[in-house]
Image 1: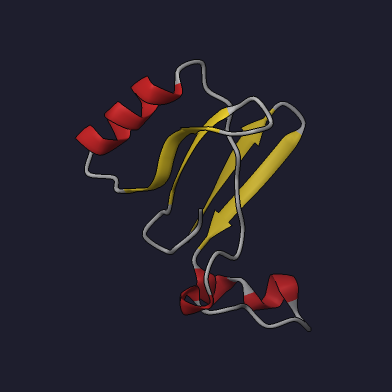
Image 2: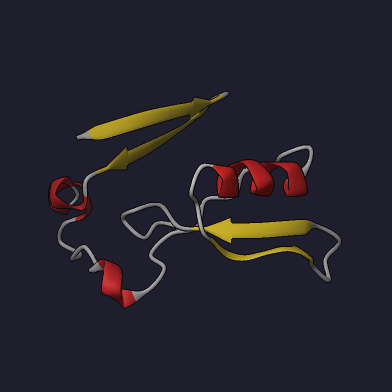
Length: 84
């Protein structure tokens, strides 16, 4: 099972962890208990509005929204497989 997202010339392949070994071998696929294994960042116009919509759809935020010292307002959440 996979889903490919296209952003301009960038393709992001999200797939079931069970399907990843052949794509990353000889490295192992880390278990979700190992902590965050990847971080995808998506810029949105209104972080607070997006966070409210995520919460309304049952998504628990890991942190934020918070103003970061580098001048951005951010928030983070994990998908059901633990991807942040």
